[in-house]
Length: 398
Ligand code: FEO
Image 1 (cartoon, helix red, strand yellow):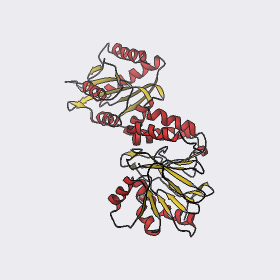
Image 2: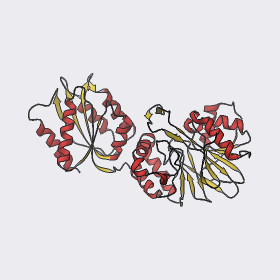
Image 3: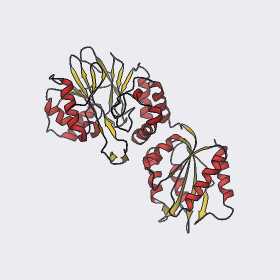
Image 4: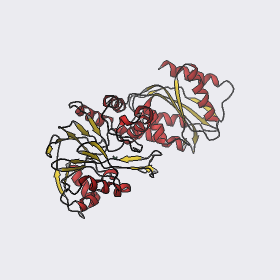
């Protein structure tokens, strides 16, 4: 049974929600689900823009069949080959073998890598600025390499000023019947998930996102149709501003994110005291215990906040493993331009502060507060003064 919604009279959302997926890409928890969006255009020619994840194949195929209502499929535009959008290409083309696959040169190679020669494909390679006329609509294609893979193109409808934006402008979270961002309170209820999606999926590729934003700024955009999350037709500028900030690695909050690991509560105690001293000074704080927090949440918060404090015990002569995982992930996402401070603990051979510092020394634009608070097992009498000093040093840089 089909489950579709109209984006416009001749454009139908034929995607689906997945609320059973535990870990998106095997890494990111999605407790609120995720949507895989696909769009069907009914012009003189018919077009499907991207397919969906294998998990929702049945619904997708029923949606396409219902939308086509007996018509044939003329084009399948493949903007992105990650399997959450490409896994169903093979089945779709077996059902509609006459459809021409419109894609970038790199996608052509990836189609063979994923599907071999099992399915005969009629491929039309397009590059930046090429156009496709389908009747009333005319589309042009823009290269968007590394947003999120190298083969990505986005598609702009010159007729309706709609941008099919691939992974860009997506968010985690199922749609739950709402297709448009203006049908929910997006900035209250979904912004955190949009940030977590952006920072973890394409956060490393700020330069490439900037390149796409610059191209997008040259055309009028009335609607954005991403591959995850809501379609945008109102207040697009506010979301573009968020993308601008995130891709430039500019913090949204002038405040401190404290991420700590604590085996027996002593490092946690120091982190809590620091948070209190910062709040005493009117500084916004947020805290994560990295042993229980999602790493993707900490990565997202590290993009959100201007100042970061990491507190951890030394473990096996190195950084406590849960903290090490978080720091390596932040490093892998090439975070830039933050003020960073550290607190270290250890009962003997306290070394992890130096090792945590070394990770951040390799990242661009990091202002590292040199004085690390060192705890030997538990805070000693009088060490509150050291924590107060660290809070003052942070306050001076705000
Ligand atoms: Fe939603 Fe990069 O795939």
